[in-house]
Image 1 (tube, helix red, strand yellow):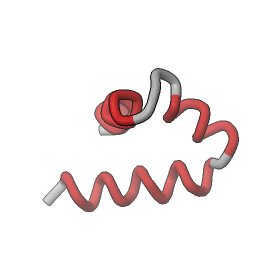
Image 2 (spheres, rainbow, N blue to C red; image 1 turned 90 degrees about the horizontal axis):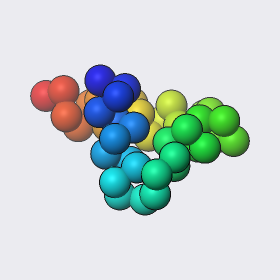
Image 3 (tube, helix red, strand yellow; image 1 turned 90 degrees about the vertical axis):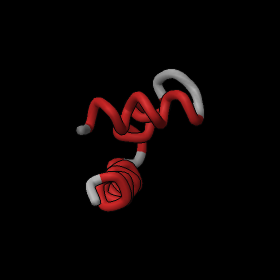
Length: 42
């Protein structure tokens, strides 16, 4: 599911956004990923 999250965020923002966010601010990355999971897993 993380691959889908990375693909979606790269499409919404720019290529490499998710990887950059994960490196620079892992807490925000995890928060956004968890929000994504709770939204799309239902």
